[in-house]
Length: 120
Image (cartoon, rainbow, N blue to C red; front, side, top):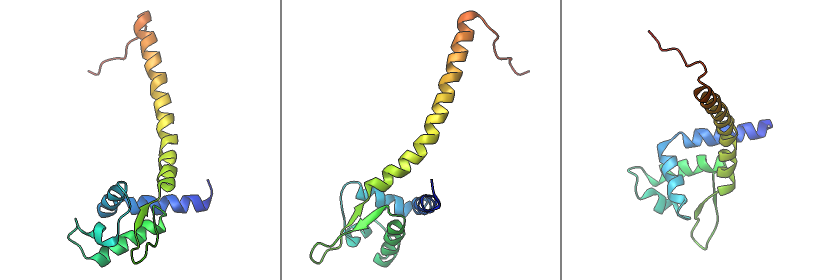
């Protein structure tokens, strides 16, 4: 992973740290929406929602297109997939470690081997 990838990861995780931006991502998972549509459920201004969208754009989590007078916002699934892949590499390591531990414990139980000591 190079420094550009690290920077994008940082931006993405910072963007997702905000609950409003996570709700915007959740809404966009159902399909594109305009700023007005994205602003509806929030008690904040459309300008504030636009700023949240800009943060998501800088993190490459969303994109915008032009449809006549509309500028719909779209989820960038490739970027979300990259985040998931980054998280998964660490999750899979831990899962392998737990499977190894489970196998050791099963072997010990089957052979009557040493049991973990109970705390006093």
